Length: 367
Image (cartoon, rainbow, N blue to C red; front, side, top):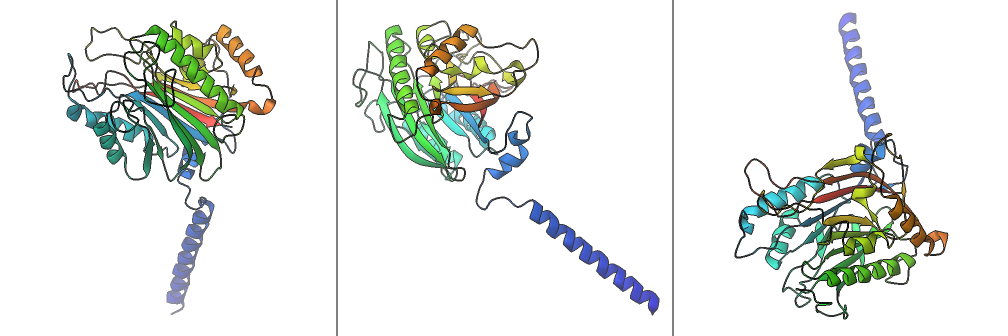
């Protein structure tokens, strides 16, 4: 009898200890209610050595997905054969990073519907067709999760002498567009500006003047004189610029105070390819023409990499600092850590190119 009683007491005590342990673990793993970004904070870059308490992680993706042509070029497959590959890429790159922002180019309306429906109902997009400001022609849309980001403002501008209406400028072969969104993080309260564009492939002057126009608009947002943002609001520019580093548009932006992630990131945080344009067959010349930029006022914080790693261009750094000083007040600055930069693969063993461009990805921590 005594032995049975002792056994019963032991079992009850063990059971109570297990319950208390589970309650303790549940309490220590509580996240703020309804905040989908908390998984990212606790498992990703918030644990990185360079990160800081209160930093907001953001993944930026830019990809020219190649418009759905009725007449595919050499080595190109129709959109209905490419779309699964491309959409799978976007889903994989954003699945556990709810603060992700996707910037696409050459998107026709049917492609927009395909991407939007595949990403799911929690995703929202902003953009218009460049031909009529509605659904005709290519979009340069920006996608973001509506449960993470609140859309505060947006605008679509044409890269021409008349940016407020559908138009071509400076000898461009096609109308070219700039999509802008102002987003506010629903839980952190941080506001950012994201710009997405696709410059002309025919006219050098059009690319240069378009870059000048984009730079002016970026500076207006940075100084708080455009939209409803405060001076020093972080700004990011993404897109296909049809301009290599030694060419006109790149030079305008780099010497105008913007920072190219692919140049500024240190070697240990860079992954994948260098070139972003591949074409659809191996004989075509590859080149780097797709970029992610940090806007005016950005100060890159964090470790400087291992000894011997490639630093960015010191001449461009000096130009950037001089332009940032011209913004005036100290409040116009904002700090960011570049956690990573990648140019992804666009073709695997099945031989299918998901596009004639590779996706470019940047991982950032806003301080």
